[in-house]
Length: 78
Image 1 (cartoon, helix red, strand yellow):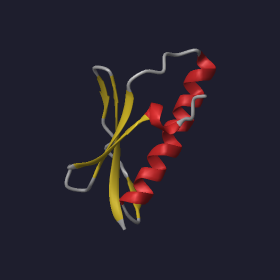
Image 2: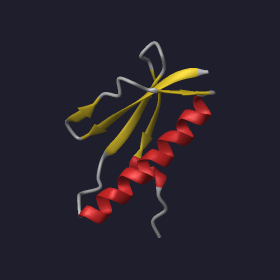
Image 3: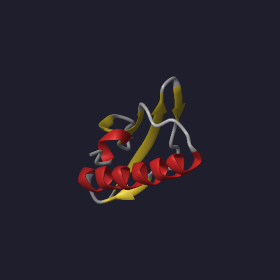
């Protein structure tokens, strides 16, 4: 198991994940980021907040960013 951290960037704001989550591999971390982004987006839609520019920076145990997931990429817009 590896520990991954899911830092959130929203424009100039940065929320550092200091706890992280133990997952099998990067693919599992990417799936968790997609699930979490969708959950956050759903809450923001319900509260009427702006949905633009939020991203997850997935970092590994050494602090290296190993993937970036834009919140926008996690939903299908027709």
